[in-house]
Every structure is written in C-alpha cells, then in structure tokens.
Length: 187
Ligand code: 5GP
Image 1 (cartoon, protein in one colour):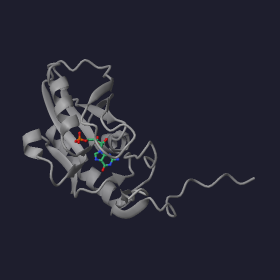
Image 2 (cartoon, protein in one colour):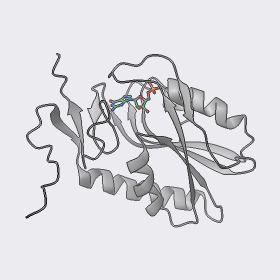
Image 3 (cartoon, helix red, strand yellow):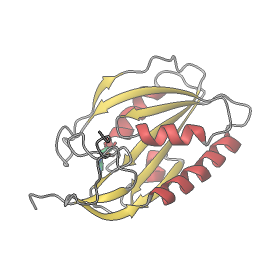
C-alpha cells in the first residue's frame, strides 16, 4: 500500500493569495541569521520562542545563527479560537531558563497591535536579563515598531489575517510552507 499523500493546501478555498513564498521566507531568515550572528558575536544568546506561532521561525532562525544559541519557550494566549484579538494576554507556559544576566532575543511570529509584545517585554525585563531584543518574522505596517522596541523584522505586511509557516486558524495551517491570506468562509 502506498503511503497517504501529505496534506496539500492547493485546493483549500480558505488559503488565499500568497503573501510570502517558501523561498522568500528562507532567504530573509538567512539574512536575519547573519545579522544576529554579527550582533551577538562572542555571546551565547538565548532565543525565547513565543509559542505556538513562532515555532517554525525559531527552528529555521536558530540554524542560521553561527553561534552557540540556547532556545527556550514561552506560551501566551491572546486570540483564543478566532481571528479577532480578545485584548487579554495570559501566560500559558513559562520559561525553564533563568534570564538573569542573559542576552535574550524574544522571537515572535507577528506583531499586530503590540499587546502581546508589551506584556512579554514587561514580564521578561523584570527577570534581569543583560539585554533584551525582539526579533519578529512579521509586523503589521500599522505597528509602532520603534515604540515597541523591535530590533529585527523579517517583513512588514498589510492588515490582512495570514496563515502558514507557524501561523494558524484554529490550530490549522501551521505546517503550510508559505504564508498566505486567510479567506474567511463567513465573510
Ligand atoms: P498582538 O498582540 O500584537 O495584537 O498580536 C500578536 C499575536 O496575534 C500573534 O503572536 C499571533 O498569534 C496573533 N496574530 C496577529 N495577527 C495574526 C495573523 O494575521 N494571523 C495569525 N494566524 N495570527 C495573528
């Protein structure tokens, strides 16, 4: 018996126009990796991955950093099972590593309103890291990146809700290799 084919998203009507191809994502992550390698030369940065959306990004990013990086995970919940923010951020899983004196890079999937980031920054800064920078794969054009102190940005994108490469709707589409606009069947 031949194995079942991998899930294909080609015929899924909820997967809209491509926003970023697999190649575009890979190339940009290579650049970000080079930047981080230069900026953290002789250090041992700790990548703090914000679950679950940034899981794909952090694995690819870490492999493009030519330094002895460490990775830990933190999980927050802000959206629940919809595509609208609830306006409330809740810590769902905390880090295992002690941040005292560490050079921390917070790795995010997307900065939208900045609510999640503000919450996380406050929480992590209180733990006494030597430094804390933010690296996000995506940021909305509308986001105040300077005000939020975001140092590394993969791409800025417009307001449409997107899926793929870690980003979900109701836990689906995280394993899609590219990033696409989500076509809401209710609209
Ligand atoms: P913020 O707190 O900045 O408004 O929202 C950040 C979080 O909202 C992200 O980490 C992500 O989980 C979710 N989010 C914001 N925009 C999108 C989007 O276009 N697609 C998906 N799948 N999640 C998003």
